Image (cartoon, rainbow over all chains, first blue to last red):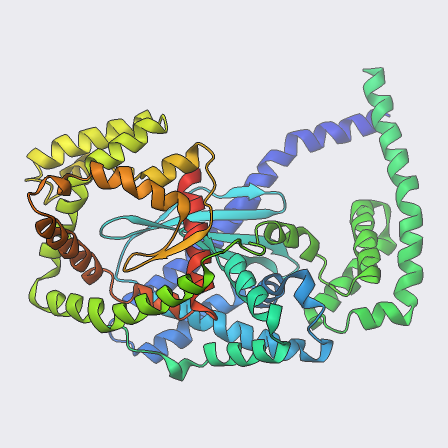
Length: 200
Length: 300
């Protein structure tokens, strides 16, 4: 019985630093990734296409595109996706998200990045960052969860707008009247890098 | 103290008893074909993880909590095809938030106006703003932007007060005093640069939201884009608190406001384009983005 008491004591004493270690781990991961991405973006000698490739190579391992894809479809619509078409969906969804991410980075113009301290939400860790724009600050929240492969991003929130929530309501709207085929067609269109419109 | 020990030992016993049937179910289930077929969609890593988890269970008591959770997960697999072990936990975060069947009586008009605004942006607002951007260097445009922001002080100050945000109101007041004088009529922002005092933007729509007024149905405004009934109502007092009202004729006022819009657009070319490229359905997309962004601003 005494042993049990000691065990409990041990747990009480040692769990808080362990928790802090978890958030610190995520923070370091995010900071190193962002630093590297910004370094690439600030490199004026690199070609846009090369930059895109380098950045994707860097960030792909920290985004759980499959999970984001699942969450975006939601429980109800997931059951409508036949098992044999999942790979196709993951593939198209990942491309759409990657393209959307790269397009947002196009707007980056050498601004500073400010980090808030990480917040633990159950098993997940959220880190708010602020992009110091000329007129105001843009908040970007990276939401991580601990997977068997390490900490992965399951959602991104830009100025209060969650990627998953937004994709989900788009998919809900489309699938209310449309079919999975319609969704795939739309995703295919959105993931096509050659379709970029003029922005300058 | 004795009670304490007793309580916890009881808890432990309860845990051991409680998880035994679960473990049994899991074992039985993992041998069945159904279990394997339920995992078809898993990535190899996930399967490997499951296998590893299974092995851990054999080691047993040390991994007590893991087996309980794993057991529960596998039971979940059995009744649902949604086979990611985290999906339930994550699902809740988004299932609740998802906007279900928005009450949108003006949907026809809103869709039409979204299309009109889109065309207005690409055919009118953007070309004009680009021309202006070409002529006027960025520092000057930023200064003009700051000037207009500074003038809007009464709106931000009043709405901070109305929401009992006295710190925000105080900061806004200091910013206005410093920037209007030292900052040369608000063209520069020494309050931020020297003292790190950032603006606390608040409008009457946010004030109404603060008092629990819901958004009502969505309304798309010409030029301004998505809004809702609450924020539309909120625009009225803000409109009268805007010192632009003090100019003599309506035409002057319109000119000033248009110039403000053009100047502002010239600083943000590319943002709308990036945003819109994410949309499958432009109207519902912008509506959703607007609502999420407003919700966040009201919560702050």
